[in-house]
Image (cartoon, rainbow, N blue to C red; front, top):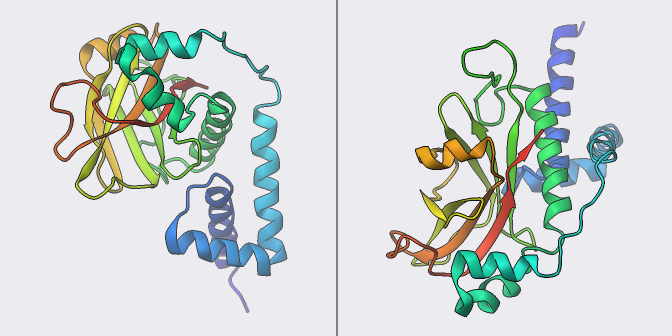
Length: 246
């Protein structure tokens, strides 16, 4: 006779796998196995479809906002200078579709973190410092337009750290991926190089203070091994994404 507890555990694992597949958190062998199972197992395919439907409904109440035509050029000039405007940003098309893609991903990530706390980054429940009330989730998807480079990030207010997980992409041979925080009109601030797997980086005090009042953008640039020699991005901006409060 089968143990009901084992069936419950198996069902929970299947649901978690379906959620990770729907959220595009899988890669390599895990992704290929999930794709094969979705094709061969109708029950698992229905679970994935249910997650997709739930995630889509999270963005239904949010009205899209179209930026002004001058926004891209103004941001590019402010952050990287006039000479770099066309070479970096127009090449990767970061602005096209970024808002909707990031909103969907961060909403889905929030659902996964709430339904299965501690399974992604291990941060567990996020609370406001000095209280027992949950703080708003502050999440970001940092992604290139084609999805070849993707990172997920969550801000932890208790420690002023950003927990990061790279789920797709890697640096070119002899090069490095460097993470930047851009708060309001300030110049980009380096948060260090992106390594393998999950990692935690500490926000500089000035950036952490501004986070509550100023929209924060996280970006990744292609840099020499060891990082930017100037303290500012010197290579192409490969991916970017706003920190979204949910």
